[in-house]
Amino acid sequence: MVESTTLLTVTKSERKQPEVARETYELLKNLSNAGNDTASKGLIAYEILMMAREEGEPIDSTDRYEEFVDEYLALSSGSQIPEIVEKIKLLSNLHGEVPDAMDVFDSYFREMGSGSKSQLSLHLPPELCELYSYGLNRVLDRAVEDYTEGAFRDRADRIECKRDILEWIQDGTTPSHPVARDVVSGESERFDVVDAHEALMSEVKDWWERDDLTWDDIEHKQKGTQHLSKHKKDKRITAVANAWTNEPLTEQMTQKKIEELFNIKPRTGTSDSYMRLLYERYSPDYDSAEDAIDFDRFGDDIYMGKIPQFSAITKVEQAYLLNEAFKTHADENGKKTVRTEIVRKVMHVADWIPSEWDVEQTGRYIGDELQKKYDMDMIDKFTPSHIHLTQQ
Image (tube, rainbow, N blue to C red):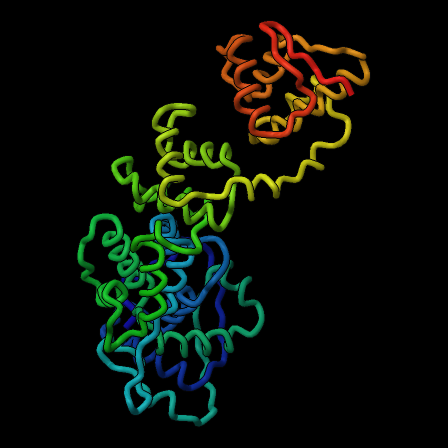
């Protein structure tokens, strides 16, 4: 039954007198007489309408609290879990009737089939009146029918279920709410929890092993209660490997993504150890990711002064941009060399290299990390202060 603790905001209301199906009216009367001494038919109708509402800003305090719980549940388990839980229904028995364990509307009311109407008087807040400005009687009839098939007495009951699921996710507490308990176990004689159980398990149980895992999924999990701590490095590597398979990145971008996702200091031994372990176990084909890079997005006119526009890019892209800038430098200025100090400053402004690097370190990085690994045909040789360019 709908609990008498249903709350309305202290606000103006509008009186409505819809003609509803006899079954609807009888259900509301039945619930009003079944222990709800302080709950009128109108108040119960309001609660059932609120349970069926799927859009709009919170209207009352119960709405706001459920939104709060939903946000935490979605963060901990997946954005679709709150909605799936709300749609859990009662299981029918062999006669097509719903069990009466929760004091819901008995099935015989739905079998009356008289087609007669009864007028109902209720007060609704302006938000609901605006939402159901047309066809309130049909909306209420449908909401009541859904209510008789649903697993929850009211929103407070539904919130309790969600809270129990959230506590189970966070600390393993066994749910006391019957629906939550069955969602977690996956077995029930009263509630249709199959979809909710499967969705929940796919999100929270060994989520790092999911074949469809994405980088955004990992980021989402790391912000919630299902995050992988630094002591779960093996599971982190598994998650990275699965995300990489679905969304390949270059080697540099992969390392940067690992650092961002797991809050690892860039260019450190810890970061490098993750990359080594990832390659040893899963051997990602970084070349295939590099082949997919769209160099056309950089445009045709590339010169040294333009390079700082392109930050947070991969090494292969750095090599391409420097090589094109060297071509422009040689073609337009007729130069055979470029000062390494100028290149160092440009690369520092673009955040390609650490600010403390000197000319020697910069030259070594360009030679070892860019020229040797990628096609930089404009570089002929290095001297302590200059990069000598190939003559075209």
